[in-house]
Length: 440
Image (cartoon, rainbow, N blue to C red; front, top):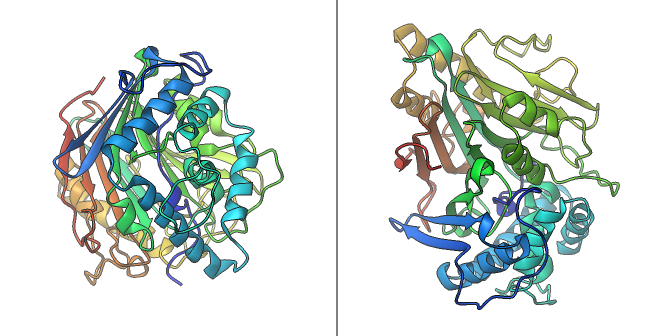
């Protein structure tokens, strides 16, 4: 089986505002006076979403965001409903008893532990998408459907991702260059491809950028004003879901961590040793270095892996040989973590491909943004975009690359390749420059 459970693609999506900042609670304003939220379509490719957090309460931000979606994002409810239906069908391959009620129960349990400001934003959105009808495949978005969507990575997962970075002596100016793939499940690729978004939450020093999909408020791939980048990747993707009632939302916590911390260590520290339903990796980078937070909720163990960390003693795991580069796929490699190297057949070949690619390019010179694009677009030795054959760029492989992000962390210049709406999975990236410099 080519897919294993990961952050539910159909459910993954983005950005929310910080626990500190504007107050909570409902605010009455005219529906036409939506000054706190704007949405614009860019090149018929993605939505630019701006949330001005100082202009309204968190509840009102959520309400206005939902109203702007209804106004500017065609067929949004239809797409999300379809995503949920297809996601459940996929999850039933692993567990035939999973249904929407299962996901709704999980989402409501975790929602109780979401920071209050973020809860208010979701409640504001639910005041617009306010139906109590949870009927599946009806093209409408109920309050419960919205909540499942809002907490997708915490309640279901069905895909895989990858990331890498070079820094220090490996790059031209010694500054970090990041490459990150968001690999979405092919069951939901068509609907999600209509919802690409880049969101900026404007809130002074707490401002963040998030590359995501329209309608969600957590961080998938983002960076803050301190030039700290963070992206979610799952690990142990076939592990049984565990929910005891005290789990937090790790994607909401990641948003809070980016909004309220200025270093990799502090972002990682905030997420460490808390109760979450899933194991996960967080890929982290700043101007000078990149690291990976490996969070094994079963052990439990949280460790910040560096490029020189001692790794597991496993004959199948090729040691990482580069002091100024690092990569991450969908397993843990720190010694204290669960043994999940072979849970998914694409893990080992992709790890090996990153080592081969960095070895080749570093032998020829330095890593530039163009070289990073080449690394992340590697279709594998057979050119078939299949992870089990070592492809970094995946297409029609159970999962496909939905968004690929290249960032210069010193300037915050950002390029993103977006899976075109309604098209078959692309076999090579179509990078466009989203930010020419800092968006803050």
